[in-house]
Length: 242
Image (cartoon, rainbow, N blue to C red; front, side):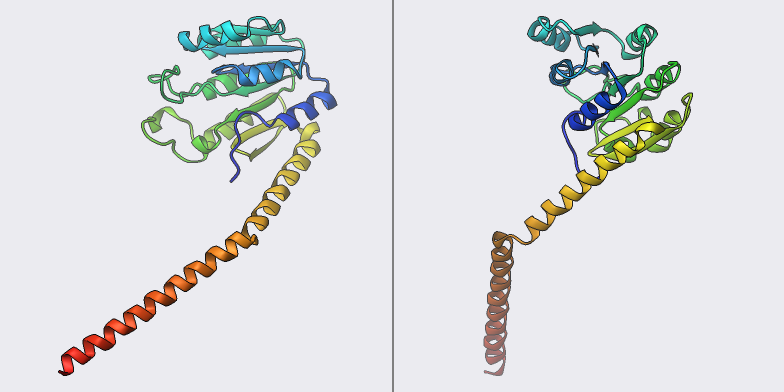
């Protein structure tokens, strides 16, 4: 996985939307509306669910003028069930309703992910599922999260494989992506490009003059320390002899 990004892989979502004619974007965990705002500029319909009253009211106040975003307050499982029943074609699902501390909802109900996937699996369409914070499922989440409330990656993958049709599933940029098999070539190519860019960037960092200068400075410092140790040893030996 390695690379961590904020929000969904925008370029990939836009490309898949164009290739497969997807017009709906469903989000659980609105937060402060950044993802919903972006999606509203790319797709026809955006549905976003938030269960923290304070965050919901602030976000609606900021973005209520955007006509193609439908803001919904409530439990993601309840609202997702309602939304899925209304959809008339394949859609994107960005699942990010798990608790993230602070005032966000979920301190006693930390991760509804498996239930959200189960609701989506009941849809008659071949949907595109993206799950944020993959690192919290590939290994136990950090404190103060309660491990027993979080499914591990095996449980998540099993849920994703329980849909009506086979899905292509990968993890990249801290996102679990599950798409119809028809979208596999597009997603695989995207992953290759992301990984290639990451390696190029790593290579640049390794071979920059500043990096080399840093290594040289460390080397010189070690040499100086070794020389100092040798001088101390010689003086100590002279003291013992005397």
